Length: 181
Image (tube, rainbow, N blue to C red; front, top):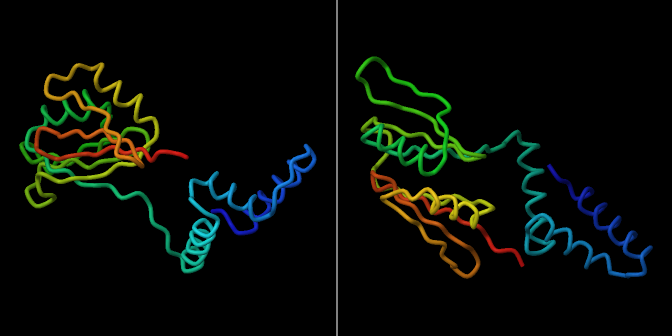
């Protein structure tokens, strides 16, 4: 977890390095650059997030990645889509017994999804957003697979790029990459 002191020390080191090379910037400008390096629009936003994280850590509160549960009805179709087309791997599978519904975790990179045949676990037709980087390469990878049911495009939504896919059970995943700059 970053602290104010870490971010301010980074800004100070940047100012000193630039000054040694003949470029002078103010402390405020350096803080704004550090904020951008952390993907935040301004120093005020970064400092608010740092403070929020500090308070949560003091209170012992920490959130981990949310893992959506996605309703499926046919395991071979789910495997064709999630494993074959999207490139996920099965982490584990669970059934209460022979001929019982499947509950499984699939993952790729840092993204984990739970796929469930259980009637009460999720509603078919869900919609989820997945933030990522490398969306152009991902979209090309999907197109190159020549999956007969889908050839997703790359949509420019102004501040982000999107690739939307819909699984055989009408669950929609919107992969999004925030544009930098």
